[in-house]
Image (cartoon, rainbow, N blue to C red; front, side, top):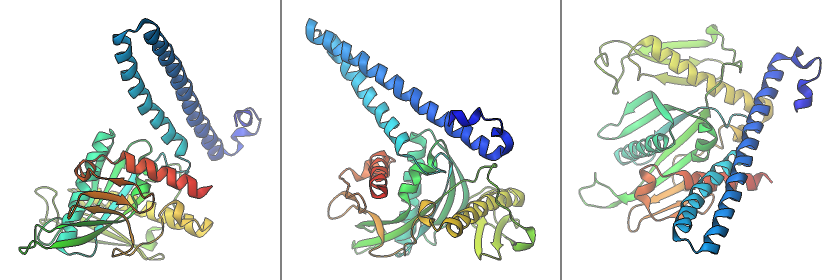
Length: 334
């Protein structure tokens, strides 16, 4: 790949040249990290040999601490190797929608939104809410948010699908067990160097009064924006920003991502690489089940991974599930 950069006509196709340089940079970054990890592993091996020879308890304790840190870094490196999609490094646009279950399902969406917000915070990612629709009595009907950070899309694409919750409903005075569903979809945020042509004539823009949380201007001005792309029928909306202009920009960002995904499907017939298969938000279509009664268990139906500490996952500890899913995806591609 580096030999290509030495060719006289390398910059004749500027976009292709820039993409090659990006790939070289990422590969070099991975190579440097690998060399650093191998150096640390050799250092650890030397400490272990010294601790054994001298029977030094302090050295043993130091080596255990170093080993745990090294294991964590090797796992991070393995994740980088598993990311093979062209958009894995991108920010992610995530949408959560309540499915079957009414108020119970809307409460489930709020729980999931909190879970992904905690996970993003733990991963040093930032979140920007683009659209938010309150539930009828409690919870959230739908929410769309942007997750900013390296490999946000590469990780969160493993979360796409239907999530099922089984619990004793706090909204049922009879204390019965309920099953609720929520769907998650994820798209890569489109970078400026990727062209998505949108003709103004193809858009219908409607404004209306916001109905969610968003400050003192909510319900006082027509600040919310709904954009319909007439040729494709795609509809996006945003109402979380305080001004109509800001909501329009956010809605256009979502529309760009959706049109790019559609373009990928039509050009390559590989919708799975961007959006995944469509799943009805109902029984039998879930990728993961969260059981809170009669026992505590999370089961991922793709990887068969099971976790008993449900609360930890709902508090944002998703990395084990994401890691297992990335491994599963890499195996089914082989």
